[in-house]
Image (cartoon, rainbow, N blue to C red; front, top):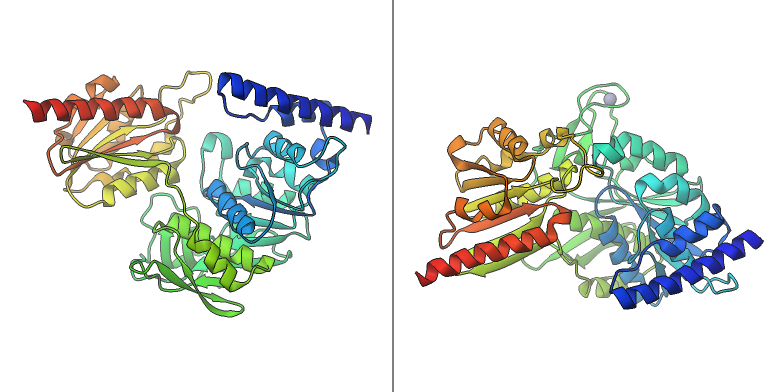
Length: 460
Ligand SMILES: [Zn+2]
């Protein structure tokens, strides 16, 4: 008990300290309060009073977006929410959030929490926060260095989840939809759409072989990687049916019908990207199961927006310059950015700068993930030039050649300053800069250099 209060007060002091630091140094808040509390009292998360209802969000992609959507929807419907949306999603971030949620005497200040939980931290968090609901986005292949394989992450989460928690799961994901099969479940999905493919177009598909009879899995529709509706024709193995299933999407009106246990409902689409539509369906399924009525939920979604912060476009003298994050080491995330750039209409030039620049202590020499990324999407007539840059540019060059991209379209440079001269920057075309998450300033520098070159040309 003494240890717990020592941890609580030390954590509160650390919080005050980090607030002052933030004001003085203009630095973002950290997990320091939680780190301090966990150092003094390793079972702090277990001991600290938690809100009555804890909703946890986990999975590979979309956790932060979904946590924000759910927290927003609950707030709009009158709940006061404790959340870790500004902190991190590992155990020290969760401890920081919970520390903020109690008074100096350990009394809880919130009745409801929405917490984003890193999937690898599941065993350090789930047994102790006693969530009432866990909402899972998907389980995809992530960085091999950190996450090994989706089935490995499946086991971590499956072993960490309590037996009584209600799970809100993606029925279009044959991996995560099988979590804790004896727990109460709510499933969400997106039904067949006219633009669907019936076969996986990605190199990466972690659900090709039936885990029961080892037969070949067949897809009724495939969205990306193994996400879609699939079945084993030999033994009938398939994902559960969705309780909340989106029907034919109307991209003009931006509305979608959703079949629910209460009958058909119509909701506004908060995004036109399939990734965020899955996030929206997860939020709808959760909120309806949580007891929010149709009309108030629909109304709340009308004012809910997803910020596509990883994407930015500027136009300079008729040339569109688009920057889009392609998080290196994570093949599905890089592929999404590649596919997006490749699928835009019109002639375009591409700049690829992935997992480079970091010092050797934190990065890896493993470039295996490049062979899980669909460079093949770039092999099309309206991609006129691809410039690869960075310490590993030769690896990207090799990968482009293996994707069948003609050599004359490829340029390989070491320095950022060499990029502008390799691009034609013709009026009416676009340049896509596909960059890693820690190259934000680097990419801004490049955008400025390209704009300068275009401006100078216009003057000449
Ligand atoms: Zn089978």
